[in-house]
Length: 127
Image (cartoon, rainbow, N blue to C red; front, side, top):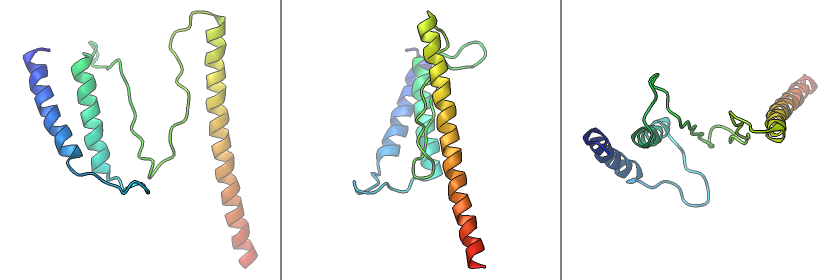
C-alpha cells in the first residue's frame, strides 16, 4: 500500500467508526434506513474496493456491488452470469440463468398486475 492508500485507509477507518457508532434496530423488526446511510455505506464499500483493486485506464473497477434497502425494495435474487464460458455445459448454464431472470421478472410483473386488477375490480364493485 502506498502513502496515498494509507491516508485513504485512515480516512476509511474514521468513516467506518462513524457509520457504526449508532446501532439501529431491536432484533425483531427492521429499522428504518435513511438514504444518507445507504450513501455512506456505499462510499465505505467503494473505498475498500478502490484501495484493494486499482481501476483500469478507463476508470472502471473490476469489482461491482449493489446495495439494496430491503425496507424499500425487494431483494435481488437473480443469478450472476459469467462473462466467459469454457465449454458447452457452461454456456447452457448461462442460458438457463438468463431464462431464470426472465421468468422471475415475468412472475413479479404478473403478481403486480393481478393485485392491481383485484384493486380495480373492488373499486368497480363499490360504485
